[in-house]
Amino acid sequence: MKQLPLFPEQASTIAGRVDALFYFLLIITGFLSLLVVLLIIYFAIKYHRRSEAERPRPVEGSLPLEILWTVFTFGLFMVMFFWGASIYSTLAHPPEDALDIYVIGKQWMWKFQHSGGQREINELHIPVDRPIKLIMSSQDVIHDVFVPAFRVKGDVIPGRYTTLWFQATKPGTYHLFCAEYCGTQHSGMIGRVIVMEPAQYQAWLSGNVIQQAGALTPSPVMTGEAPTSGTPQGSTSPAGVTTGMAPGSAAPLAEAPGTGAAEGSLASAGEKLFRDLGCITCHRLGTQGRGPNLVGIFGKSIALQNGETVVADENYLRESILHPQAKIVAGFQPIMPPYEGRLSEEELIQLIAYIKSLK
Image (tube, rainbow, N blue to C red; front, side, top):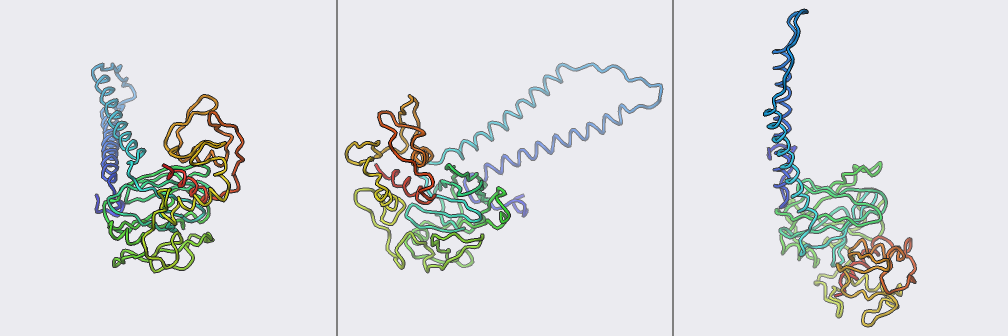
C-alpha cells in the first residue's frame, strides 16, 4: 500500500504508528461493512416471503449471541480508543529537548522563525533525527499546518499559541499545506519542509548552504514586508538564511553575555524590545521591582491574586503581555498597561523567547 500514490512517504517517527492505526481502522471498517452487506443478502434470500399466505415465525433472541456481540464490539472500540489515545498522547507531549521553531500563519503564507533569528517564508529547514516543536499562532484567521509525509497536522489559531511536534527520519524535501480553508487563495498557501543532515543544517544556520542535487534550493529572504500572495517575494541570500543575521555574515551566532541567548537571536531581539518598551523598569532582573521577577518563570506554576495557579507557558505570557489584567500575580498591583494592538506577532514571539531565556 505504501507504493500507491494515495499514501505519501513515511518520513517521521510517528508516521508508522499513524499508518498502522489507519490500516487497522480501514480493515475493520471494510470487514464489518462487507459482513453487514453479506448478512443482508443472506437474510433477504433466506427469509423472503414466498407466498401471500406465508406468515413469518416469531423470532426469539439468543442471549449468548447478544453477549458475544456486545463484548466483541466493546473490546474492539476500546482497542481503537486506547490505540488512538496513545498516538494522541505522544503527539501532545513533545520531548524536552525538542528544537523550538515559531510559526506565524497569515493569508496566505507561512512565516518560520528559528531561535537563532533566521526567518523563512513558506520554507522550513530542520535537522534530521531531531525533535522539532512548532509554536504556532495566526495573524488573521484559522490556518492548519499539515505535512503529509510526517502524518502531522495542527490548527493555527488567532490569539493563542498551539504546538505541534515531529521528528523527521529521512533527509529530503516534503510538502507543507494549509489544511483549513482560510480564504480565496487558500490553495496557494503551500510550502515545503527541507530535512537536512545535522552538519548541513548547522551550515545552513551559519550561512553556508550545501546544495543537494535536486533537493535544495536557496530560501527566500524575509524582509519584514508580507507578500501580497502565496508566492514568496524578496531577494535571496547566497546562504539561504534570512535577516536574523547580519548581511553577508557567515560566522556562527555568538553568545550574548549574561542572557544565555545568541546575538541576533529571537531572545536578543526580545531583550532589546524589553528595554525599549520600558518593561525593565518594573520587571527588574536582579532585584524585585513593582512587577514579578521574570527570571526562571517560564514553565513554573504562578500563584494568582484570586487564589488560583497557572503554568507560565507561552499562552500565559502572551496573555499577560497583551491583557495584563486578566491574571494578576499574587502580591502585585494591576498597574501594567495592556499592549494589545501595540505589538506585532513577531514582537510577541521575541519577548516570549527572551523571557524563556531568563534562567
